[in-house]
Amino acid sequence: MAMSAGSSGGAIADINVTPMIDVLLVLLIIFMVIQPTTPKGLDALVPQPPKNPQQDTPNDRTIVVQVLNAGGTPTYKINDQAFPKEDLTAELTRIFSTRQEKVMFVKGDKDLDFQPIAEVIGFGHAADVTNIGIITPQVEAGH
Image (cartoon, rainbow, N blue to C red):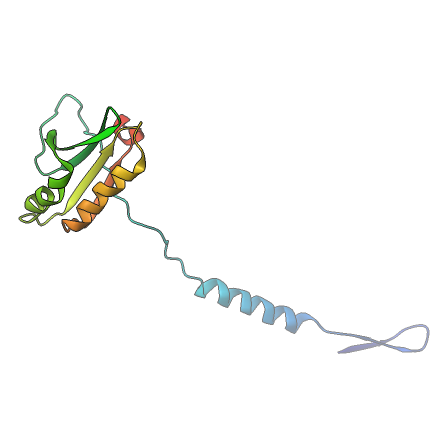
């Protein structure tokens, strides 16, 4: 606390705010240091387009389940081979029983509701597939 005598003859008292500012800056630095810097979110697997479009080799490791709109009722294909809806879980279980990488992609028609696609994702979970990706029109176009 500083005191000074003015011309009026009375004492004027001013509060020294320097220690309060020091404490404020120390607290600010502490809170900046303890703030978590790890990013939060979900990991997403997106199929990447081939580097060379002329070199289109078939990949039997990639499993793509297509849900197509056939006159209002969805039809299902696993790597361009048609399957009835009832056999999808059994076929996916057979495919992924011997695989270490359990990655599957789901591709649906743009005119289809999300419910059949969600059912295919459920079939994948029932077949013990750990990573399921969704192929969107933007991913398929390569943008």
